[in-house]
Every structure is written in C-alpha cells, then in structure tokens.
Image (tube, rainbow, N blue to C red; front, top):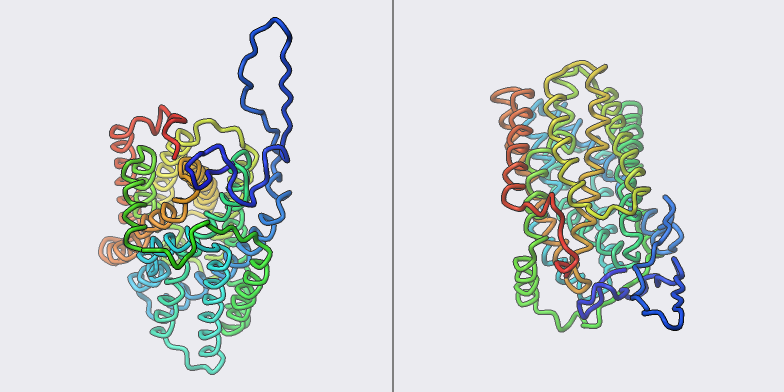
Length: 450
C-alpha cells in the first residue's frame, strides 16, 4: 500500500489494488479468551506478481521502449563524438548533457503532485521522440556535425530526469506496498535489458548501416513508449493544478524532507554514487573500452551487454526477494561491494577478468539502487512523492559533474588513476556516512514513515 493525502501510510493510493485483492486474512476469536490484535497479513508474492496489475504491465512496456531507445542513443552518440573529436573530455561532457534537466526535476515534481503523472510522462516522452527525429533528419541529409549532437543531447537531457521522477512515482501510485520491492525490481529490468538490446542493436546498426539508420531504431522505440504509456492508470491529486504555487509547494516539500531522518542520508548517498561510482558505466565506458581494453564499437557493445546481463540478473533476484525488512541495510552492504568491484576493475586490462567484474558491478548496482528506491518510496507519503523524487533527481546531478571532471582527469592522469581515485573516495565517504547516520545499518523504525 501507499500513503494517501492525509499522510496515513496504511491507506491505499487512488487506483491502487486493495490488499484484499492480494491476500485475505481471517481472524477468529474464541469465547472466554482475550482477543489479540491481528498480525500484519503475510502476503505471498511471486517473482512476477506486479505484472498482474494492468497499469504496471503497460508502464513496464512503455519504460522498456523509452529506456531501450535512450541506451541506443547514448552508445551511438558517445562513439560518434569519440571518433569525431578524439576527446575523452567531450565524451564526458556529452554524458553530462544527458542530465541537463536535472535542475528542473523538482519543479516537475511539484506539478506531478497536483495533476496526472501519466499525462506528463507521455508529453515528455513525445518530446524525446521529436528530438531524436531532428537528429535523424540531420544524419539523413548528411549535414550532421558534432555540435549538432551536443545541442540535441542537451535538449533531450532536459526531459530525461523528469521522466525518471514520473516513472518511479507512478509505480508507487499504482502498486500496493506489499508489491513495491517486487515492482521496483521488475521496473529496474527495463534499464538492464535496455543496455543489452540498446548496446548490441545500436552497435550493429551503427557499424553496418551508419548513424542515420541507427537513429531510425531510436525514434521507433520512443514512439512505442508513447503508445504503451496510454495504458497507464491516470492517478490525480485532489488539488487542481491551477491552485499550485510552485514556490510555496517546493518550500513545503523541502521542509518535509529536512524534517525526515530517512530522506537526508538517502539523498546524500544518491549524490555520492552518482558522483563517484556511476561515471564508469554511464558515460566513460567508451573511453575505457578503447584506451584500456583496445576495443572498437563492437567490443564496447560487448562490455555494455555483459554489464547489463549482470544488472538484469540482479534485478530479477531483487524482484524475488520481496520480504526484506531492512532494505537500507542491504543497500549499504551492496554499495560497499560495488565500490570494491570498481577498484578491482580499474586495475585490469584483460577481458577474462574485466568482463566478469563488469557483470558483478551490474548486479551490485541493481541490488543497491532498487533498495534505495524502496526505502525512499516507503518512507514518503503520497502527496509529497513527486517533490521528493524530484529532489532525488538533483542527486543525479552528481553524475554529470563526475563525468566532466572525470573526462578532464583522464586526459591529465589516465583512466586507471582517475577511476581508482573515484572509487576509493566514494568508499571513504560511505564509511563516514555510516558514522553520521548509524540507522543506515541498524535500520529505520516504522514511526519514521511519512
């Protein structure tokens, strides 16, 4: 279940399946005995339980199409800029532009708390399709230049962070709390499968047919994401959008987050992993593939696919582990494991060692980030969910910072030294965060729920 507008975390949100649809509990009392309050119902959740919800099926399909197209676009443009400019710094800058709209995500969160999140999602995904079509037209007429790629990537980047805010909020709106871990794990598979499909298909089209035909596939995926999005349930707030005062709403949301003992450490850790852990796999991998492992675009696609397979396996495992009482503790353990794997990966240039490490890195990312999302959504009430997830996207701004700084450092000190420094610094910061917020290990209490 999810929180309603009154802040009662045990009340279902609009259009969410009732608990009686998932499990029925009968409590019998015997005359002469003191009756005890009923225990929390035990819900048996299968690994694919969330797919029984019609809205989730459509959202999963729409998210898959969107993310598959996005991953194709990332690989195609990253390799194009690297070949055209021979600059790791510009590759990092291109990756950073994918998150140019991060600063607007909190405003989108405010609006999403007061109107149909589905409508906003469809509108933003249609915008991504238009930007892809513009780049496809430039490639088709053979007038594409690197600066065109940066402009269009910047425009597309304005839309992507808001898309992430809306997709996560919609899951919590339409799926009961008992299925939240399961649904979050299954939702994460859209990103994992995208890295496999997007990398292999994007590299194949780019190497065999050229950038223009590769972008036909990107545009088609974005189009299907809009069509599938029409089947998602439209959950509206009771407050009409015309009554929204963005500044007052944002202040209210910030106060709520500052007062929460759960949201503060989660936001810090989200920023930390985006700054120090994600740059390797979310922008700088083309540089690592070419300069460390000596691969071409097909070798890069293989590395991305192996990483994605590991992440997919991790997401499926998380979808099956639905009774985790302390997701915050599991999040911290897997975060440490993630950084250790990064350190090991930066010390090798062998496929025999590097590819298995990439698969393990992918799995650890799924374990960590799914747990983080579950903690954040569980401890946030319904009417604040858009704003909280919008501010959560500000933490993603650590990724473009890490990409730009990392690209410059690689040009100065090399790939291995830069990425090792990132991983060691992140690991030290994790230790400090546990000292400051010990409940990340001991666990948050139910009284700390929004």
